Length: 328
Image (cartoon, rainbow, N blue to C red; front, top):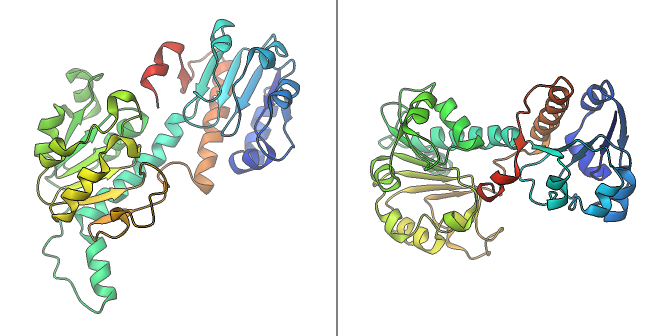
């Protein structure tokens, strides 16, 4: 077996540590890319030559026919990142090469961040910290526990479903909007299926876990934002494009609810964007996914799928061609 890691040296060293490479070497001969920067098509062609398994990540370009011709025995591509759209081509599917990604590993970090936003926001910590820093001592009037509240989850992909799993540790009502999830499946996950407008009207926290697709573009428009309860918390760790930001800014100026935004459209927002100055907004620079040591989760996911492939077991992150239109 030949396993080729195609990403550049800097990217590889961020994601893969020695223990991950050691596990891969137990499966076959490992070839790494020691050049700096994103690999060119010619470099990909050289690196992938005669490989059985290829590992890609951010910065890797599409696996074109030219690249694939160098690896006639290629059977599996493992993408140590989220969406596979930057690297997959029709030629890849036509040759029957299986593809897997690390979206589940990324989703765990996103879900954990959303849970952190949920707890801290319900506790009103953002305002209380600001007041104590300014010499005050808040009375905790607006503090709420993660108890006997309704948490609305919009989207039950890898991140949304893991967020639900984490929420099951609390005594809360979990409402789920996802048109691709049945009532039975929602119940099995620990949530109840709800319509989007129903969820927005009922929820004390709304956490968004949607891919960026034409169907989700500005799904949270002026009319839907107006349905949300006073004192609600809206959390977006997904994509900025799913929210009409002008409409959200208008609602936030009214002081009706609180927003935790890890993503905007575009990124970064302009220096004078209202999200940067409104007191009821927490704006973070797209850190919900894998960052720093969290990137090693991606390596672990890739290694585990490589081992599963060798053992003839299902792949946790397998992606099929017919799923691409639903993925971010």
